[in-house]
Length: 457
Image (cartoon, rainbow, N blue to C red):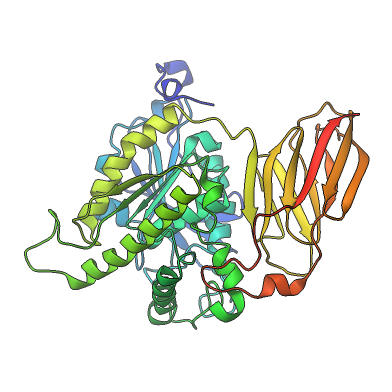
């Protein structure tokens, strides 16, 4: 882990480095680069995941070219109908981060200021907006592209993620689906519950589908799919449903009720008040869910404030101090890993799971995974690859037990020290994963599951 003290280490002319340059990497093609100030760059990029150019606004420290050490990164998202430049033009991000040893990356989350993509790989890839695979672009491509082009701390300990409104959903869904990538996450007037609470889910559905139809010009259901047929996909991207994935993430939520506050004009703004009231309900619902399950969160409910930029600029200023402190003293990764997902395959915290089952999307969960074993629940058969815990070539005794019985087998660690295990789960019943109701998971992510114990042979 790299502490902030190392970031602030004295400089030497012998190891001074050049100003940033930007080139193709990780599936991203650089179309143009514009240096807007000593600290600010706008990079126009193209990716197959999106199919059309988007902008990435980047802030680096003023002395970036004289710092030999690697720097942490904050990924900072705009809201609905926003652009990559919003946080600089309206959120005072350049001044707020002045003097900090921090890189700030502010990508587009929509095309040309339209309603935005809601931070997911769209179910419908044939709309007029093309593939719209936003999660692939932001998480699978942008992060490694930034690490390839800038002197970053290329691990979880050096990454934070934050956003406002729709971007607050983005920061929390990405952190919940990829908790091993971010040490800290923040939502400013965001929507961290779009499914778990049925009342909140009804409002979220109306807002998301209105964004699709009214602002993006596509059919309802293009993003997450229809609630009637794709409810499992909504749940699998809902931060409140996935809240236990966030135990290892330092999580901050800023919200107000929509009542006029110190930054509001005398004349009321009913729209800004109403939207803030909706995001307040989503945020409080998320916090209640987190508290019920013992997931720590930092809630700043300042009551008086509307859905407007002065509050989000203040949120950012207030978040930066705790964020830099977390970068300076990052928490250790979890000793025992627990993670739930609807995906057929995933890799987090060094564990990789691929499940063979009839349903494309269905909840499964890895629980209390560590060197001596784990529990996994779901249906079908799971192929589990452990982290590099074991001496290469060493032999382990593996005991697999569930309601169907108990089996003892032998596994040999590969050349990297990993075990590759085949684990039977519950009965593969497609209907279990195809029916869901808002607020009720289509298949429980917890349960008896299959327990695997690993010991030296």
